[in-house]
Length: 347
Image 1: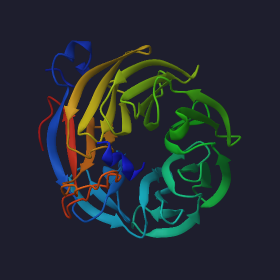
Image 2: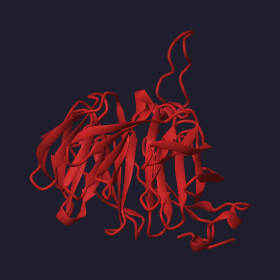
Image 3: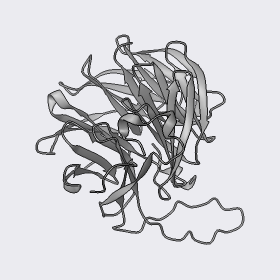
Image 4: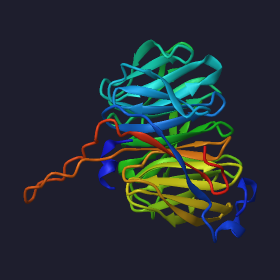
């Protein structure tokens, strides 16, 4: 996901449903200080290992979710966008946008084992466990590089016909779904053929970024830049419902046990919607977060969501006709905002 989006700026968990929509379903719990300098991008939760990985400038910050504390970092990842794990191999993978490479990392030592060439500016990435492959989506390269997770060798390069953003894996269908931002569509990739086998228009949604997946009901949730989250049927490729969201969306998440979908936006809001039925999506809360809190990860064990944010310097005075400049992050203010079900206890 691109840094540009920063400019666009009760019941228990088991009872969250239509009867709970009159009250806030999520609330602020606490924050985890990260510090350092520079921007950030994807945040990933490894629930089984109780770890969170935050892409931060030229490194990955590793957070222990039991202690809510930083326990290490993975360095030498220039322009990193994302991090993903292959748990059975005890390996992690990074998308290093500025050097157009992927790092293969030992999860036990957090040391880089090797690097592999990708396409230009690898951004999002997903692990496809059936074939043991990692898909790197090259935002500027308009392609996906597929790497064998065990041998760290390139298996295939898939032309996507546009700029890819986030993606999800549908193992049961043998597919990977990927947002194509400049085409306002979802590309459907066959994981055996390594080919695009379908393209699904997102209208009325445009310029998609974040994506999440309800595997049981075959539903995709796509955050679109025109302030909509669309729900698609992956058996027909059709948009079946939409809900309004904030400006500058960059991530989506879906909680299987509560049937809640989340869209985090750079304007300081996260929309929470309930999948009432596979054809009905209802917004149940607009959660106030902080400016720039556009990326997000969900912990399916605790149902908490984690959103990176920081303080920003006041924007400089612009000359007439000049393009707006990127906001400058105040050093050592990066943190993770933690939100959870409204009946949760602050830790």
